[in-house]
Image (cartoon, rainbow, N blue to C red):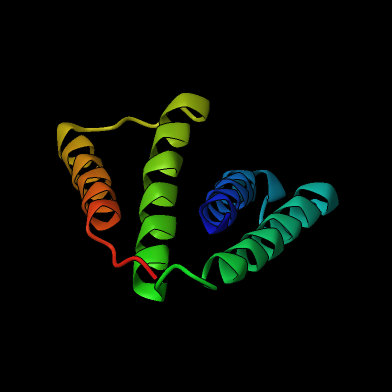
Length: 107
């Protein structure tokens, strides 16, 4: 169940981060509300996931997957270029998340 909380935390964080540009510096009400709500839900879900997932592992997965997802969304939604160096960095992040999941202690 806590894996689902971690997945929800990642989804909410990615949503909130992807909405930041729409706030125009927090000058637009509804996008700003969406960002604040998204981050609040993300931290709530992350706190629930931490009941059984070690904090170092959970945070690494949360931030790593979020970073990779935002880079992909930036390329898709905002046509931001992903250079080969950036792609390599994203691949390293994904590899790190996979390794953490393969070798995390079971509690």
